[in-house]
Length: 426
Image (cartoon, rainbow, N blue to C red; front, side, top):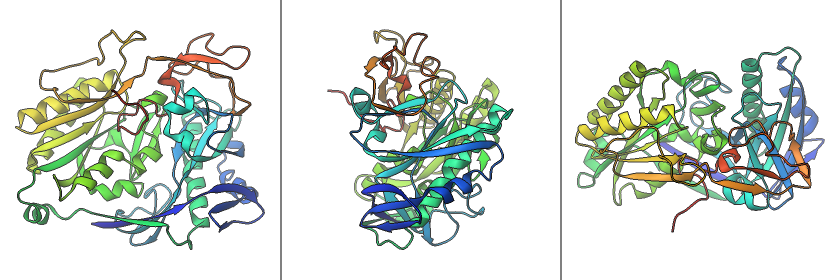
């Protein structure tokens, strides 16, 4: 399966009375977008704002971040089974509006929502401070249940991303990147002397607003399965969860999964990248055992020499991570796990809730309990009303002058377990 991504560089986003893309500027018909989103009866109102890198702007509480993409050639469309018709994606040509994102915010759904600062020390911890963010601030209709409001905001973000991507459908890409994964036998025959590597992506699926969707299906309802890596680039996986902001995989993270991108960069050079195994994270031990059994079985079926395993979330999912790692290692397949740490504010506590001697190659996204002071900003998009309630903060985190003292857990993407963050070790 081969996919070409055509990157269209976005230099600015402005509101206008008509939709157009001109000289790198996306002009958005604000009224038309609002009319589209308010067709959902779960939303009473929505408004829009734009935040640029370097501005004294704080966006909170952040629910999702989405990159506008558009299928211009080939089967299916972006976000299949949700926005586009249900059809296998990952081939043909897709346009990407690079340098911007849709960010959804508004009244809090769950306590694990986050903050994006566009400048100051907080901006150093999130990659989204480097994007031009079109923020959709949603207001729920009266008496709407939390899960219905979550769904409405999730869909609003996807609809807005699709709406904006359509504006630049006739633009000529500034750069084109091609990605291809062949069938297993062809892959083995093409690079028989290179080690075969697969990627195991764990999807947050513990329910209670902790969900991820695959082709529109809640991941807790699936068994581990195999995807072409290019399907991920076309929005086959989308976020729908309220795990801690620091290690939540937003939809943008899935669309730009750096593990997939980096494995493709080494494909045919140092490794033979044969595909992706997706698996879920479960609440009950029996379900964890079942899914990890299937994951290890699929890795064995692919006859790979090594796998990279990425986690989403912390605590309960640590057991899913270690079970996957342990069982795959017991198949004679080498593993590297990507996680983050909750090692206490002094960094001296146990980093993970589970462990095994076979988990001996670990990449960390950082310690989410690290404390940071976020200075006040000149402008807030959304509301500061819930800052003292989101995970990583505490009663009194928000000072009267707008300063926030909290753990970096509150910052969207700070310790992301795909490695899509800005922390490093020296």
